[in-house]
Length: 251
Image (cartoon, rainbow, N blue to C red; front, top):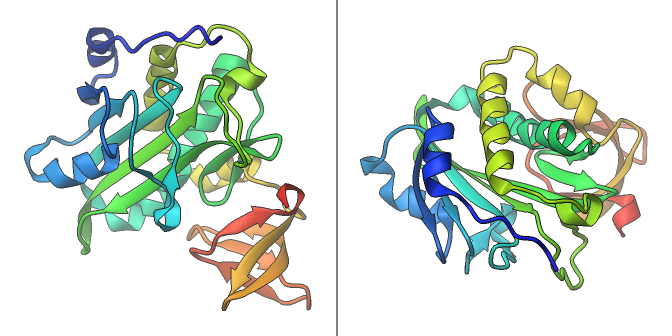
């Protein structure tokens, strides 16, 4: 049985500054939805945590499982954010998770474009970024779910941190390291270069849907605008912007 270390609200509230920990909800439909609904009255860098979510969301409006106390379910708010920096933010969040796994647990992860975190081709964490209005500046809510303690994923191709690191895992320490790393990455000028070292490598075969047709492609590179450059089966190159991808070995 997992040795679950609970959140320490007072400790996190102090140590996470300048991030503002607002609440740790015992059960909430969605931490992202909460921040979106209350964004107008909240400060920049407000964050919330939950022990459990009943309606957690991922990309493409997928619902995801969030067993009580088995993961980190976290969302944070960035006010008046520059829309031109959304790609950097997406990459920075994924990298902050990957670097935290390496620094704290000596684990080598891979980022599946744009920002899923994988170990052994299985999903460890996912990130959802939602903007509240369009324009040159916008409010942005970022949510991430990280599988920490052992749980039954049924048919999902996923695993928990505890499955590959069977020692005591303190979510408080992990959160502190993540946000400290994120602060550094959000002002980095080399984010795309760093992202390349962690992403699913060039030459990897992937499946994606293009114009409704399932197609196998090969990764070439990530581009400065955040799109994924791939080679089609006929040898032509194409940029993926918001398509879903699947690693061939997962199928």
